[in-house]
Image (cartoon, rainbow, N blue to C red; front, side):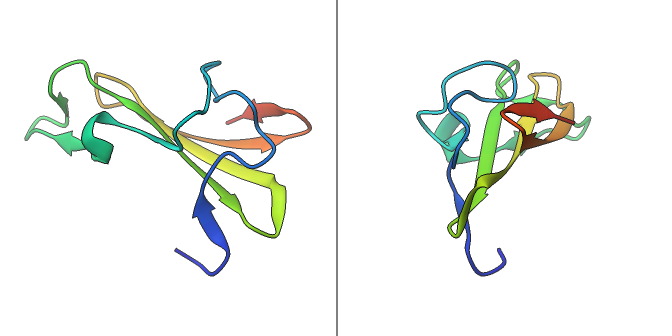
Length: 83
C-alpha cells in the first residue's frame, strides 16, 4: 500500500452497509477465497476491508464482498458512504 495508508475506519463509525467497524478486515480468517466460478468460499461468506490515511482520518475507503462474490468499492465523504 502507499505510504500512510493503513487498515482502519478513520472518521467512519459504521461500515458502508451499516454494520459496526470493529475490525477493518472483516473477512473469514482475514482472507478472501474465490472458486473457479468467482464465488466466495466458503459459500455465502463475505465481508468488508476498510482503509484510511494516517494523516487524514476523513479519508476512508472500503471494499465490500458479497457472499456471491460481488465486489463494490466505497468512499466516505461528508459523513456518509458513497460508491
